[in-house]
Length: 186
Image 1 (spheres, rainbow, N blue to C red):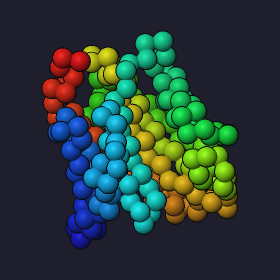
Image 2 (spheres, rainbow, N blue to C red; image 1 turned 90 degrees about the horizontal axis):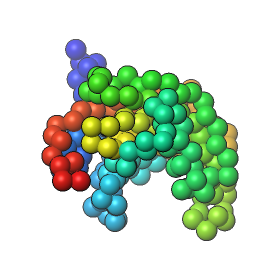
Image 3 (tube, one colour; image 1 turned 180 degrees about the vertical axis):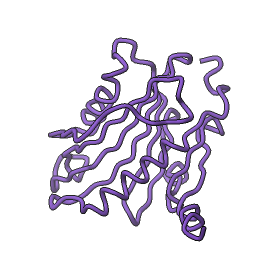
Image 4 (tube, helix red, strand yellow; image 1 turned 135 degrees about the horizontal axis):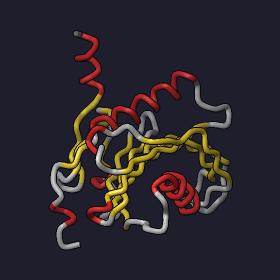
């Protein structure tokens, strides 16, 4: 149908970590490693129009964190890394990721309250964070997908919330491992 063709035009399949993983993301997302330094364990995409960013991370497996608490652990870790003054968890649960049915995967959606500037000055800003964690025990890694967007204190509209959830679901539905090669010789 024309509707599904339009849907296809809105997304592109992106290969991550040299083709190790692949997932769909909005067509307007740009690879930030082309304009700034991005750590090796991360892939960072952003859209300057919508202010949406998508970051993936391969982290060392946190064996002391139970599967059921992994999303919350990494959500709070991200808050700490970003000097968030406050966090608010809106929902959490098991992530539906067809490409990872044999692994524990969970999601969390919430807000971080941060300062607009890195020096902790400037206006307070809220960041809506959608995070999924896949526990890749076979390669002693925790894989994170983080979709985030800053917003004003007035809050996100219903349409904006639905759009973000839609993007997040599309990422999780399409996310696949294409090769375990990157993990060999870790």
